[in-house]
Length: 198
Image (tube, rainbow, N blue to C red; front, side, top):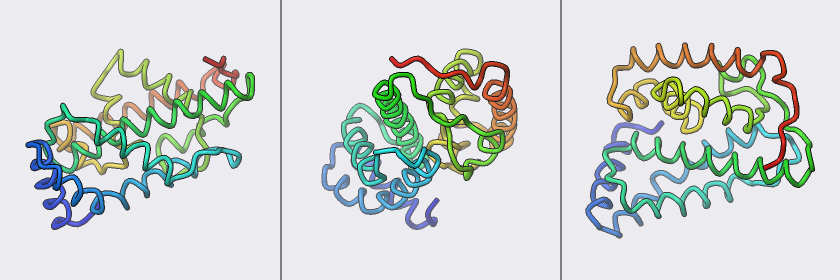
């Protein structure tokens, strides 16, 4: 995600922004906008073709929530995209819940077995994934965070390690273990059942 020069520039601007420099935020957004839009497009490609959320709207919503994070002491670019990944997950899940409620019991296509292993897959039931990640977080919060960083924020193994303050080997191990667990959760008996609207 980005070259070294851009990454160091983003980190410097984040630190300045954390110290109260609002001009740093103005300079930061053009540097991260394309990456945020790329993350948004990737997630929306996994949605059903009748989804109503556009990538620009998703980026703008994420941006508004990011600039509202005034209590975050930004550490670096990886930290920024880790928080962005959390926010994008929440936005997508909230949107999926509203759509499901509007359809009165309709369902989203389920996560396929390959999609947990490879985020480039086609469609995903965000509600099922969110529910599974919530369960995983209760058992192993770090594994759930690794999935969030790799899947929702699109961070590499190295960037995820930097964001979490752990080794790349630990991230890779957690990613492999979490994917196997999600595979079982999302493809097991009853995984095709419709979800109740909230």
